[in-house]
Image (tube, rainbow, N blue to C red; front, top):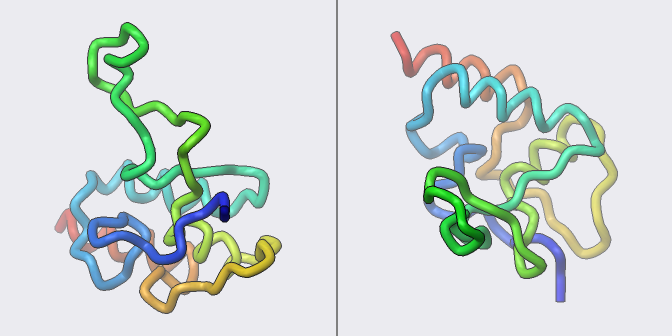
Length: 109
């Protein structure tokens, strides 16, 4: 089984066809996060609340079942990272970090 999602989910922050819903700061932080080929970002659909581990429910936590976000991985590959075997870059993801940053900056205005 693949360690990544096949497609960006409906509410993926890395999709260019989804209206930016995060704060500008968080969206920009996530965009820059994709520039480092060693970074990882799990799909929110594959994480669990930290309450399951004694937390206060304010954080999402990766587990052994978590998978890499397809939108994040697509942007990372568009920025020059290695493409895992079998993964197809989504045309729904931002083409470059600058496009994602611009979208999140414009959404705040």
